[in-house]
Image 1 (cartoon, rainbow, N blue to C red):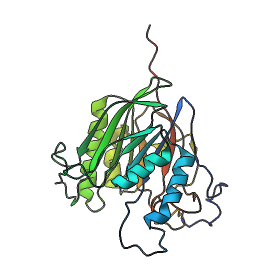
Image 2: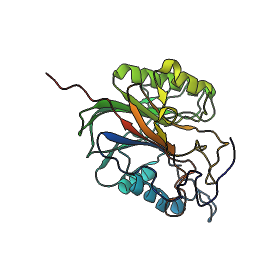
Image 3: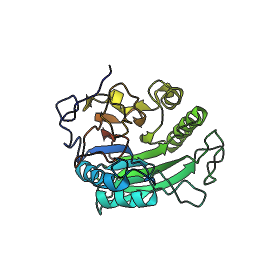
Length: 293
């Protein structure tokens, strides 16, 4: 199926600018992945890509949606600080820049401390030397990373791991090997897991086949009990969302996590888009540990 949508709707009866999911109450958790587009210099004054233009749209989205956990990509220190401020004082983040000195672009995970307690976290390079900050070596010319956090849901006592990442945009080999690294992290934790990321890969590509191999991780959009939106391409580049574009931003979950609903958010908040990507969102219900005898 292909085509675009009009400027006043997304094709399923919801108007641009409305809340897609919004805050969720226990036992449900609202998970979002969002490539927030790093600020760049020398942008034309009227371009929607200008950071000064995007700031109010990004803030409005975050204030309206209030995800329990948010995986971001392309976050520079200034944008990470803006995201944290826009979400509100109850939010914290984990993760730092991907450069050797811990600076620069990163993939921070933001979480609502009213719902989630952080138990542990780590960051690693997506390279043959994952413990060496800033390292490459799989065909990616710039460092790529993943950030993983282990959380306890304060409301249900459910424990789970969240992994956030941004795969390379040029090297397919790097993306395939990165998918294997994500699978290894998930397997090593031995907990229910949710993966968020800009994977720079569409459905049925080699990186996605590797990530979802053997059903150890599942595409949250595909298995959701309710789909809030059509399957928009998640990189409209500030244009009208279309159905004939790839979904390159993903949420994946381990079996046993119930996906209540999911969608690719095409709404314009405060009249515009906060990024060249669309946010992808899901409402999850984590398995709850049995009470001790």
